[in-house]
Length: 409
Image (tube, rainbow, N blue to C red):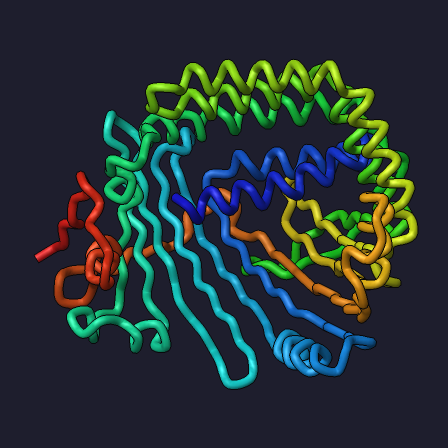
């Protein structure tokens, strides 16, 4: 289930960027393609990510450590393969995520499987992780030679210290996604930060059944445009009554999940604080905009800026790739903090710059075509329960109310 939720939030993040682009015809096509992807019952994703780091100007005793970090990242690569399917109501789902991290002297490969059924009064979720050798080698003796670690989020939350009703939490997760989509669709109608989505025409993308046509879109932002986007987004969101109502409803619903005796008081305190914030919005925005004025002297995006390409095929978003170039200048950040606080030398001697470029690509295939997901068979001989691992740690007190995972014989 966590894999599925991660997929959902990745899509939400992409969707928010679409919302931030306003609603020209190109922008609306991207927005609709992203929204439709959230309704897909199954899909496969392949993501790759690599890094390029350049650094200079640090103190000698710091420079060596920064150089080591840069060398590690420059040679590192992340590959992520995800297969997921669910029923139409999103109450029953399976997912498999294969994670591969490679860097000099280290290669980690570990798959994760999730099987969830949120129907009924007692939701069932099983998460299975195949441990990489480096992790398996550090296990206590009683778990030696076991390939899989099994987790049951509901058993883990059955403790005296936990005051969240997990069944209510799952129901909230299902209903919130619908509320969020409705809000985004409405909010996008009035959001116009003033930059455009570029239409790069039709390209053919490889698929198992042969090349498929896709319309290519592109969003490009430089440092100044990115800061303008931040300023516009915060001002627009804070001044929007619709956005404020969405935030308040979300927070109230979240606080109601708590089973603590003072839950009603916490909700009341939040509502009072929220109303006070709404009353003081002009003062908040004045301070925020003053800080953004000073932020103009701080570089956030490097020369390559933010450049993202999207592909839409058959009304679905099927590819996202691009480059994010971040630049960190410690001297600039130090000066910015000093001007915000009206004090000097809060970060004395801060110097050095890091230029980080993140290259990423995600291909989405097999939409609404059930992928083959085979959950591994686990038993007491080849697996152990995460709660048992916690209990085995020195000084660890077992959490009251937790129940061990039942394995197949």
